[in-house]
Length: 423
Ligand SMILES: [Fe+2]
Ligand SMILES: [Fe+2]
Image (cartoon, rainbow, N blue to C red):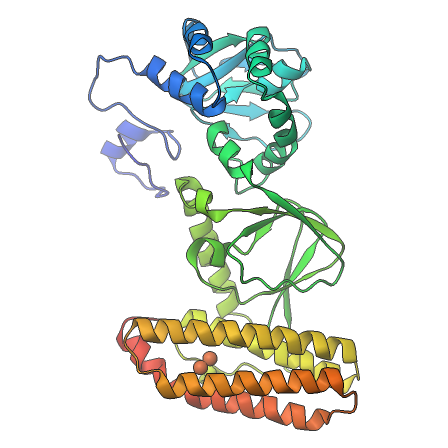
């Protein structure tokens, strides 16, 4: 078995073995005379229809296994398919004249199952990309087995979620149906109003179904995310909180996915790893608006990227508070103070955890965190209670906090973490 890499420059030997094979392809290096095809087919069928009975399995496994050359068209767009193909080995792809995203299909995928089940014409053409082995199942037989196992409703409710995810960059390649079933099993949907500020400390991956969301670092606009884009991958997959602040630009609907399943899928991990690297680059080179009160300065850096990003986010919230005070926007002041309180708590816990992990004596530092949290809490309560709360006093406290916490306190652990190879 050979695991292909994303490396585009292969040696001659690697080219002979793996030429034109895509990520995840399995090559036969030592000839084996055992026939694994029925065994794979049985496993895929049991994964696809968990309640399938032994006699139904026997019936299906008695059907013909067929091998096709690369480039063979199995299902044609706009035609009814009388057979459904369970892909056992090799890779196939979908093509559509209606501008649907082309995606690759890997083993464990039932090709033409939805059009076969619903007696509709196929919305896409499916053809083999490599030599493939399939189990050719009559659509009527498949439909009967689906009804006998009472899974028709489940399949129907998952069609839209699966269809949508297959159109996204993250999920379009080589995610087998078995894997996709696991991904959509516990999917949640949520609606957000315009101008919602996302507090993303939960370990879930969000995919935008409709609407748009703007991304900011400190107070700089970075980009707009739209339908099929995703966010929160850095904390969900790698435990690194994001430096972005996300605000919905219109009403939007999102899909929320459990990352535990995604972590087990090599192609998803690999894509998100590359994506995260690109994002970190953007964050590092971001410049804040020179007119803002709380500007990021190089001397703020503690030379630990993830903590610098959190400090940038704190500055973003401080600028929002300053703007709210200057424009007498009480609503925004209260909202941003609440966000700051919440994020500061998260940030302090994060710092303390990482310092403890690497054996730093956090006693004094943790006490200072606790004091700041109490002060923030007090200020927030006062602002809620008293409309005439002294705004200048508030801004002064925040300025001092930046000086004390980020410049003085946090600088003390900077070289310690760097000496432990934490950057
Ligand atoms: Fe800090
Ligand atoms: Fe700190």
